[in-house]
Length: 157
Image (cartoon, rainbow, N blue to C red; front, top):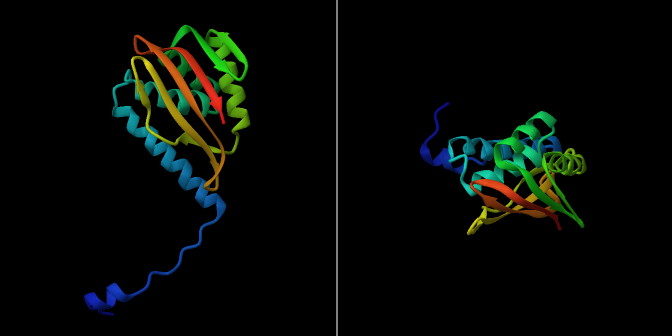
């Protein structure tokens, strides 16, 4: 069947209905794609360190991957602040990241804005979604020393 350019333009596209699982999959893929673009970025830039910490440590299900993220971007004696608690060291940061991940189970956790800041103090806002609906929001604030996290605040709104 031949169509003229006018006929093609005037032809209405069929409506596409998507299930909640399709929407979740699209959100997960877009989040992974956003993180994949970081592979080419400077691994020590504040933006990369903050985004990788969120994605690879706090939103990651695999404990070994979380540990690798800590080793790659944090000082070994870094202090992490969460809620009313302040704790130092690798074990404390990984425990807090693990508990955060458990609370976010089944949600698409991703940055909701670019990293902002200067003079070694940076902030990254994040959102956790289910089927495109916001379930939780917050921000991470990191104080970086020599391109690694020295102090980190995980704030949930």
